[in-house]
Length: 414
Image (tube, rainbow, N blue to C red; front, side, top):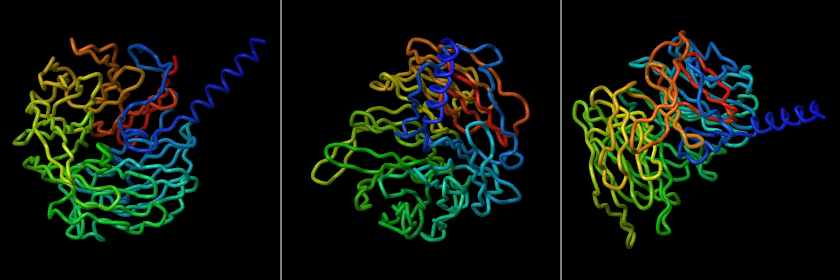
């Protein structure tokens, strides 16, 4: 009887692990929150148990792509010999296939950027050079391909295309920022253009789009080089623009929408707009904004601020070289600013924040508006090159952490 119970328990655990999904950057809903439960409440000094490690996702720093997971397969991107590559692994870390996606960025911070997006039997990858490819998830076979920079007459940006595409029904959204179009919807099955948003005559940003629904309106909101804009999801009609500038056009963080308000931020150093919260109004086909507050020091650049129970948590970019902050969503007042591990990215699961610093430190943080509340921490093993910029992922009771050519999988099951 005990053996049978253990076997059933193991099969249930394996089933739950394989069924867990994280199909696009920041998860199925794009809110960077995992639905996992039954996770470890703390870790030993060496961190959770390391289940496996992949060494060889491309070469050298390779890139900064995160991971996506669906139907028992894990996807990420990297580079080798000047080529951008999409990789597919099973959940034991065994490589199933790799597929070429054209030339890769070789300038500052060389390698891939975007995280592949999975949608059923298909996976989509937008390379740092604008190559958008649709692959068969099972085999890596190419279904269609097009270069969105070339097709819509866009120019690459200072640190290269970093957007992870968004699937919405049969539409695939991306932001080429070209002379022909600033934003486009493509047929996810064929790659053919469904609609385009007229050009703003500005380059694209490093951000990803979000879907906003309010007062019967449904729009895509995203960033461009000089600010934020919104378009109608049905027609692509431009609904609004909002200026939000930084000297090097660094708009990296996707807008946060909550309760009729939009929040955006960019790095202040050497001169930028910082953070601003806006009240969104929709009336008679027109969009207007009322500024609620601004916060210069909340200048995140990692697309990793988290709104939880009325408070924003995450790190600044330039203020004292990065501090972990808690800011009141309603008032914009700082509750605390803790100088600890510098800049980094994060995700959320079962009430806790999983934070990964640029230097490979991993922290488990309790969201607490009263104090900076670190439960435990550990440091990634040596071996990875460059900064740890890929975002952490919690899926299937596992923690996935990428560093250059390395991918670590840790057991979080309680």
